[in-house]
Image (tube, rainbow, N blue to C red):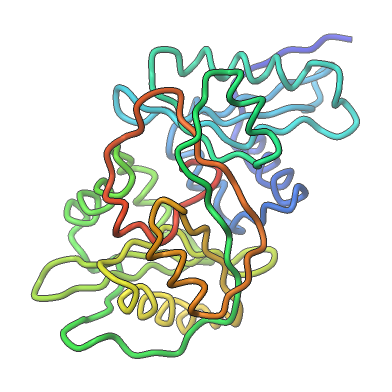
Length: 280
């Protein structure tokens, strides 16, 4: 048998998203189409005699940052070292960069042995979408109506690296909706909701405060007729954790945000929900 690792095709990335759904990670239904745009060569597939059996995403952002995700070995080939070979190939592609990941907590020690250090844990909270109106002075508008350079600059405050091509696709693909909160002409919140296999996923969710975050979630849920929503809330922002708990949402999943070097500088206080477990 021959095992080879190479760049994924668009069809392979769709398969990777299906594998992620099989792991219970509940990606958005059209997420794979935005993944490919982020970094066309940032997805690797390991093939056994031509058949995909392992995968990993290793997306480069800017000149110094990268994010690792979708690290999966098909269940029938686990325990044979094929996944680790794929991991090594992926890390080689990100050599010289600070690398981040959102991994399951059970693998935290393995990631630490590969040079990653824990920055925070994120908890996915799920529950019914609130039905609220925006706070006084806040307008909720379609993200597509905002000049894209302003939206990209706002996004960078909470992600720490440029990702303009990905952001354009992520906020405008089918089966999703994107909203921006505006106050006195300034952006004070941004969120995207994607239809998913289970609860509708919201991410990113950036907001100046909890009331704006609730207004964004409420507007998005109405736009997509979403009864139940899920947000990956970062523990690095205690106010966001309290916000989700006060909404009565239940924790359903936990991940560990880890980095190989100095984490990118971001506005933790406005980070209510990370964009995706796969690409950061």
